[in-house]
Image (tube, rainbow, N blue to C red; front, side):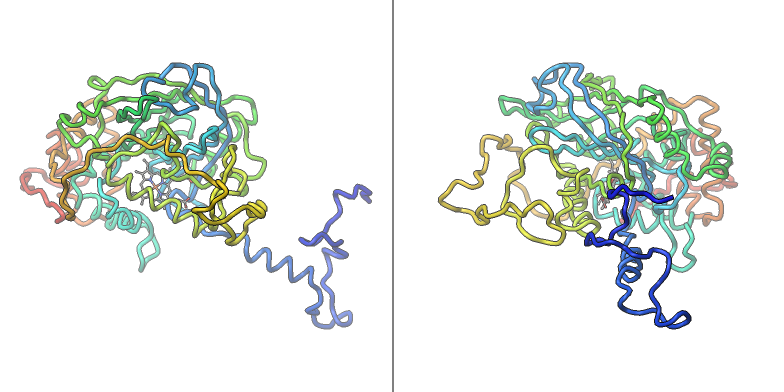
Length: 495
Ligand code: HEM
């Protein structure tokens, strides 16, 4: 069938007609291929460059566009324009992911899930880059590369190594809280719609009077929580390695738009100073009894990307992207993340990744950055590219200065976080589980620790026992150890 529609005619990247996309140009019918078959060369060369570096972690993911709507007035806490009035809507993009698997990994794996949101506000993009757990394995960014080495492939076998994984986790007693989430029912969400999201860190909000409160962000699934057991997940993975993508994409295509309720917990500066733990410790939650959830709004995901690579693979989220009225806290982990993301994205997507449509702010952008690979926006034309200048381009905006945070007098030193209250919160988490859930937690841990050295298993049993004796006893049985032979007072603290 011939098609006379000009728009459907095959062209080279430079727009010239492609004469043959079937036969290479050869010297004679049986002769060698010619270098002057520039279309063949362009086609092969382009193909060679299709793969960009995958995210070092959170490589496998799904994304969708949506809308955030304010349902409650929180303007007394924040001047952020997106929260300025009830009913206000802001466009957004969300990407959910697993963490340890590569780009081709199956979705229904036991792992944390990433929960990254980009809000295109009128004062810049706010990226809320969270997880489906309210805590993390540790509280110092120094450990992050090691975590990823330990949970990803072993350098010799090129296989995931439970021994490496558990050696690392159990060397940090503060990891037990997060490990309890992963080994519990929430370790394998049925799909991305069926999990809650958490900012996890402590952030701050600043109001019109330039007053700061500390906040934690919560996103509660309106679909409810649904999880897979190990056995169910095995069947799902056997049938569909892309099960979370299938559900999210399929539901949105069918008009069944998933929704999450956003709320915040608020802590004043005074409360933060008197809090029993370090309120900026990412291995701990703030109890809702003390810091109740305050409703803010909801978001709905209602549009699938037309092209996965363009919008999902090239999405670049960074905790460093905040807007006036939202800021960070002294959380050490968050501080490390303020560097890590934008740096990873300069490497993965290039210095001009902000111009990729999914990342581009929907408000005017003016600065003195120029040039660099893949600059496609006109490079700010003939505007001045230095400061100070005498022409008022572009003026800094001191009215957005945040209130000062107390920091000193302070000594500069590689201080160790000295709070050793590692086990109270994992114990409480264990105790809100039903008896069935606890049994599954033991069994999941047992399966997950198969092949792990006994001294590492022992270390985990000791930590679990400290959280709750029943937790320790259940895990000891599941991993095949006799708890009466373990010195339960022996806590190995890695430096
Ligand atoms: C992805 C670093 C902790 C959530 C990434 C990426 C880096 C990174 C470099 C890849 C970014 C990219 O290529 O676009 C770190 C460091 C951490 C840390 C250094 C600790 C110091 C956390 C924590 C959370 C988190 C605590 C959640 C509370 C995510 C998510 C993604 C991600 C959701 C995927 C974002 C997307 O969908 O594109 N992390 N991370 N990370 N991280 Fe972290």
